[in-house]
Each structure stands twice: as C-alpha cells, then as structure tokens.
Image 1 (cartoon, rainbow, N blue to C red):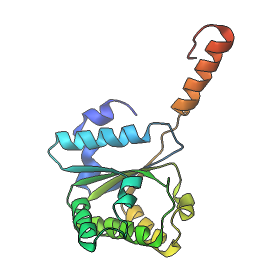
Image 2 (cartoon, one colour; image 1 turned 60 degrees about the vertical axis):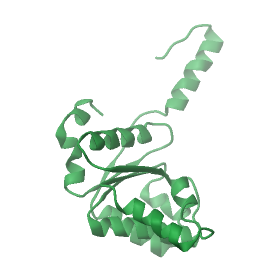
Image 3 (spheres, rainbow, N blue to C red; image 1 turned 90 degrees about the vertical axis):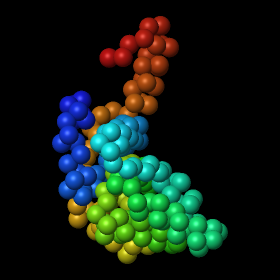
Length: 177
C-alpha cells in the first residue's frame, strides 16, 4: 500500500462510516502490520483501540472463568472505537467460544463500532474453524454488511527470506532479487 494511504485523514474513513476492514491473505504477507498501522493512525486521531489476537480472545471467553469475568471482558471489547482482531482462523472453536465471538461482533455492530480483522483464510474457509455454521453465517452477515476486504498481493516474507538464504548458501553471495 502506498505510504500516502496512511498519511491522509481519509485512511480513517472506514471508522467514520462504521465499516469493518478484513485482511484475508496467506501467512507472512504483512496483514498484521497493516492492521496495526491502521490502529496506530486511529490512536493518533484520538480514538480508542483495543488489539487482541484470536487466540487471546478465545482464551478469555472460556467457560472455566466465572460468568462475571466473561461479562467484564465482553464489556472491554465493546467499548473501543476500533477492535483489532488478529489471526482469525488459527484455532478451531468450541461452541461456547463461537457464541462468545458472535456476541462480541453483534454488540459492536449494534453500537456502530468498527473491527479490523486479519485471517489466513478467505471467508469461504471459515467453516473449518467455526464448527457451528449457523453462528458462522450470522457473524459473517454482521461483518460483511459493512465490510471492506483488502488483499495483500505479495510473496510471503518467510518464503522470500528463505529463498535468499538458500541462494547465499549455494552461491556464496547474498542476493535479494
């Protein structure tokens, strides 16, 4: 993405229009970094942001916690102007986790609060980690109703670095071309 995308106030248009942003691409292409850049720009403009990985979100939704803790955590996720929700799809969800995530997305939708999420899976692949297809469909409905989906079209940084390292070992020189 061009640097001016982040320099212009227009980069917060999604927040003012109450839209969600999804970065859906393979691993190691920079989705998380872009989401964080949008989050930092949002903070610079005086808005509240909460950043949480999918793993941490699921870990804090567990039924082992007292009911009041879940409610407190749900309230924390409801408040900020922007919720950064990273690594969606790296874990398979139990029914109670899917219900919790649906509640978070649904409450933010009702309150007019934006979400930026990143996932290695396209929307079509989400049924693999959401075991409850009805909840998955409902969550997607809330997200897609006002979503901007961005694709990061590039090679994986991991693959590029591995290729450069292998060339260095075989040729004795380092080349990044």
